[in-house]
Length: 316
Image (tube, rainbow, N blue to C red; front, side):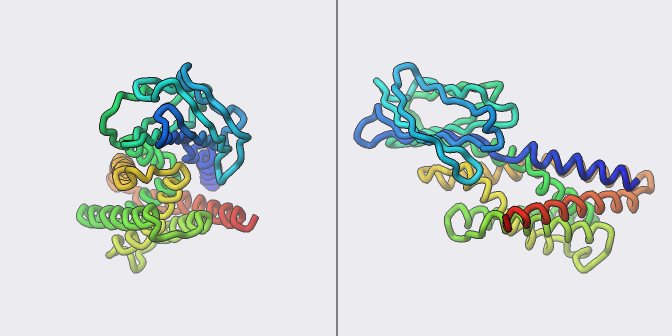
């Protein structure tokens, strides 16, 4: 049992790194003086720097680039683009994308903003002619971020193991949603800010604390929504950090934030049946106590590992 637990923790810990949420981001700004001239920033995650993807612009565009530099988790290359006609109605392709890396493309025209997602299966995006665009790509990014964030997933799983009763489940998930939506919005609007390394370490601590609650009937057994709300505030700051890393167009800040948050919620809802099914089967086969012990060990072990790793990252 102990060997199995250690093996499981090791595998999950490795998965945490291999699926870290760091999409590439191409930001293109149209000149206010000349509709055929653009400035661009190509942000590619350092984790995949060994096989960096390249942007292919329309053949009628002349590209000048500056030396790339590193900022946070990205290698950034500044580009000057001079085209014979506006980018509307043309196509942009991202070559050599990694299987684990999607790319968000943001084009800030004079009067609106266009955004879309490309990946290794569909590396080309067609820019439509003038019309009103909505930042629906952030819905996908929010959904993808939740599913790629093993710490957030384990928190949701562990939280459900602390709850009994359908009404308590609704209250707890609602409290967690409201809390992380509040801090996500406040951070995106510049009203609240904490160092991202500190936030990630504290999120790991919430997971460790949650592990102690799974197999014990402590103070929060009857009011799990209070714990979910308090810890949800921290997880919202974690979501905001991911959003800040990829950048959000100021032209559509509210809509981008809304789509990103809705994507997180849909991902959350999609995950809920998994732990509920485990709990149901455990009760049916009279194995609930054993299931709680295993869940507590996995959640607590990974939470403690992440906490130590993130604290070391802050110090170094």
